Every structure is written in C-alpha cells, then in structure tokens.
Length: 377
Image (cartoon, rainbow, N blue to C red; front, side):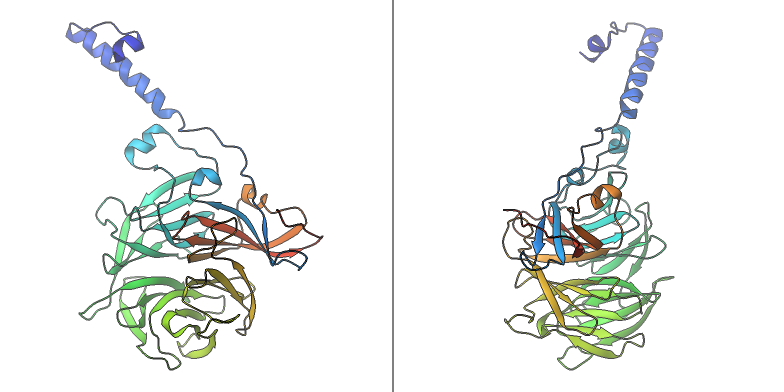
C-alpha cells in the first residue's frame, strides 16, 4: 500500500530493495522536516475588567487557555514529535506555574509532567515524563536566573532540578529521616527555599550542590511559625513570602529569615483569607495571593493592606473557581501584549491556574486605563 502510494514497484531483489528503502527514507525525511502546523492566527482577547465599570479597573482578564495553540502559533516537526522533543501542547490539570524569559512552566498533576511553553516560538515540551527521573506528582515550579528549573514533587517526596533542555540535575531533600512533603519552591537571594507541609517548615538549600542549610519555622500560630505552608515567593529586596494556609495569612520573612509582618487574616469578610495557596510578588511590590477557598486572587500592597480582588468562583470568563498557581510576568511576547484592550495601559501580567471546572490558566494584565472602558456583556 505504501509502495503503491509512493510509486514504488514491488521489490524482488536486493538491489531493488535497497533502492526502495532509500526512496522511502527520503520521503520520510522530507515529511519529518515539515512543520506540525503552520502559524496560527493571532489569539483573540476576552477582556473582563476588575473592578468592573463604572469603577476604575486595575486588572483586566485577557485570555484563558489550556493549550499552547490558544495563545501562540504551534510549530515543530514530526521528527521532533517522534524523538520526544515536541509534545501535544495541552494541560490536563494545571497546578503551580512559573514564568521566565518568555517561557511559561506549568505543573500538570493530570499528566505528571511540567510543561515548558516557549510563548514566542510557539513550541512546547514536557519535563520529567521520561529519562532517569520521572515525575510522580509535580505541584510547584521555580526558575533561577541561569534557567535551571526546580520542581516540587510530592509523589517523589523531593525537589528535582532540571536544566533548560529538561535533563535532571540535582535532587533536594531534607537531610534527616522522616516524612517529607515539598509543596512549594522559590529562588530568593541565591538560595532555594522549599515549603514542607509534613514538618510545617521552610527548608533552605544550596543551589550549587543541594546541601540542606537550615530549617525555618515549625508548626504553630506564632509569628515565624506555620500551619501548612503551601506557597512561596520572593521580592526584589530578598524577602521571602510564605502562604501560611491553615493560619489564614501570608508571612513575610526578611533576608535573615526573621519575621517581618503578616499579611491578611483568617475569616470570611472582605480582605480576609480563606485558604491562601500559591502567590507571587509584582515589580511594584504588590502581592498576588490565590485563595482556593473563596475562588479569588487577593492583591495586597507592600504594607499588607488589601488593594482589591480579581477572578471569582464562577467558570465564566475571568473566573478563578479554584486558583492554585500564580506567576508574575514583567514582559510578554508581542502577540500576547497585543491582547491588552485599547485604552488600558498594562504595567505587567499575571498567570493564574485553576484546577477545577475547565482547568484553564488565566492571563491577566495589571495597570490602569488611560481612557474610559466598557465591560463586555
């Protein structure tokens, strides 16, 4: 059938067989050089403003997606697909997210891999799905300035680092014996910090060789102690932000890892936190906290004062029914910046993952309008 389709007659002798094989190989190589798909059209924005007009909005939802094709052109060859360098660019169940140098990293607890999406080139690959280290349940991810990727894997009970090509490098685990459950990672002031919900502690590691340096905190409600620390982030000043989930607060630790302040408090009123999960800090010091109990993202200023909320528990556009991962992006590829509606000036962007409903990732712009905006009906 293949020979007939390619115009190759039946092969009866060794010479003819060799010629047939060469012809077939040439065709396969030609097909392998072809792209999986041509560049897609520019993505269409789905703007939803927070707060809605007539109030002055400071956040606008741009797009929700669970496929790379929704936000970037899909490129790659068939040979890349066969060799494992390219993968179906979709997410089953997004959890922790990180953004660095044009790449969006997404922990997928449905497929048990970390997606590496190059948003400019439109290429996607998967980390930890094969090789010496196969991920079991990746829940959080962070990236350092050199491009090393750190993945907290609760199934493996360790943090694994990968280079930019997806090759496993180091494994980070608390030195003493006992249960270890890493659920969050952050690179701050030259160290790797890992939240361990089993010990209710934050562990500090050397990124150079994986040495366990110190334990911070322990179970409790006093300042500097935690009850289910489940999210970590750092700011430009080297402060460490800890999502202290069952204490219903965010704790800020200084460079010496001492307590600086608490942000938020447990409760069900405006400004209270239900179950804060992952978080990140904007270049202006604004803290973005995903609250998986209330279904909103809270914004706090440098001093811990509530600024506003965005998202919401619904599955409609702009909703965040169960927000988990949060990642601030100071810059984006031009095709995504083009999603910002006319009249709104975006200072930076935020990705928020949702683990229920449509299980999508929302892209939001943070800034101010420079002309009146109208809410899409």
